[in-house]
Amino acid sequence: MVDWLVAARTVQFGSSIVAGGGAIFVASVGGGGRAPEEGRRSVAKEIDGTLTAALLAAIVSGALWLCLFRSQLEIALGDDAGQVTMWSLVADTQFGRVSVLRFLIALLLTGLCSVRYARPLLRSQSLDWGGALLGIALVVSLAWCGHAGSGMGAGGDIHLAADVVHLAAAAIWVGGLIPLLLLLRPSLPLTPLKRYDVVRRFSTLAAWSVALLVVSGLVNTWFMTNGFRDLIGTDYGDLLLVKIALFVVMLGFAALNRFRLTPRLAAAGTGGSQALCWSVAAELLLGLLVIWVVAVLGQMEPPGHMQVGASETAPALAENSSSLRGLARGAAHGDVSLTWLPSSR
Amino acid sequence: MRKFNLIAFVLPLIIASAAHAHAMLDHANPPVGSTVARSPGQVTLTFTQRLEPKFSGAEVRSASGARVDQGKSVSGNVMRIRLRGLAPGTYRVTWHVLSVDTHTTQGSFNFRVGG
Image 1 (cartoon, chains in turn blue, purple):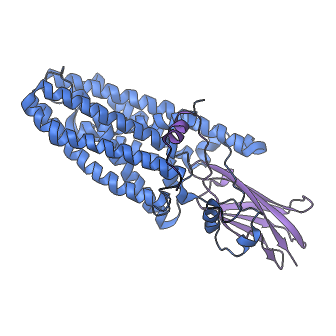
Image 2 (spheres, one colour):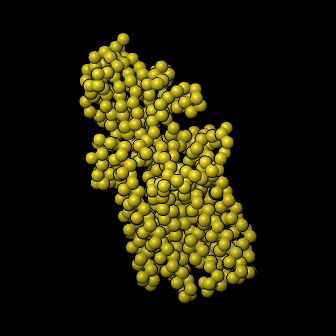
Image 3 (cartoon, each protein chain N blue to C red):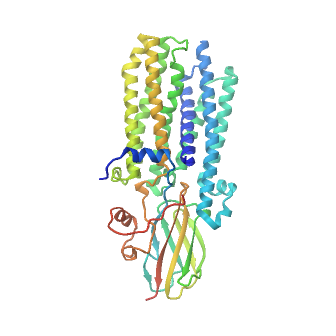
């Protein structure tokens, strides 16, 4: 049976990253919309078409996510389920408010991409950068929909900031790969030198993104795994290691592209472009797999949030404890017996 | 250390996976399982994450099952449940919360008033 919540989250993260990263690519690397060559103008339309499709997917999956959240909450509240209306979710929960804001951002960006698609002559640098800002907002607002948006105090703020940076960097890298592929494909009538120029500009941006991903990823991991202590030996930590392994393989492809295939691009012409296309496609596929893993991780219990439901099975121990965190860890290691209280699903 | 099993990870990604709890009780006042000399004016529950006030609540019942709570207030990660004057005896606090990251949790514990 398909877990629709994970499916909705995967599509939401993936489409937001593709749309946001693509919009940033167009503004910073250049989708070719203002270039005089016919080929580059046509690819600019293709990029905007792709962004529009991704935004529509983001809108639909966002609505599905909200509906699934409502049904999950109704089950959890049981007799009080009557108070769960769509309006109350939107008005009374952070997730609902952020979802509405994200719908509006997605609609605005869809409008902007549609205008660029239908009226290429209206393209301008300021319009492209306006799209990039909306794209960044669409992606980073996801931070308020997950674990990082629920923390407390200074630690919570640092975690949230790290998540914002992580999402933006992921979008710049992974989201930029689709427009890059469209520009690199051999059938496009571009000179090897122009392809090389596009790849070099994107590579510089992606390299900075990787650096930010590593730093922000370390901060996030610190918070989610009790200072790396639970990175190994917990379900969450193990799946996080799968994500990190995929990231390392992505880095391998990125290094191959930057240091081997890109220099050959200018010299080898179409042949070099084809090799780079395959390698970028592999990088993109891995990036989408990482997004899938992230969607699952968001549904799991991070060890850094692991707590115990206060239970009468260990009252004496609880009596002497100012916090139940220690008991939770003790229970995880079999030192004490506590009743675990799972969520509604 | 547990043996790393790839299948154990891949399968949950494909089939339905359980959503897990997030906001959990960090500490309570009166403490979990404690005995207090006099009736407390309120029960304070502090959770590990920020809560959605509208969808978070708790009730306190005496050993006979009678409700003794008189409403709640939620601010950040703290929930306060006002109480009537409690006679000596055992009381059970049952809570349910929605954290701002959309996960629901519930739990309960006892405390005692008087010797």
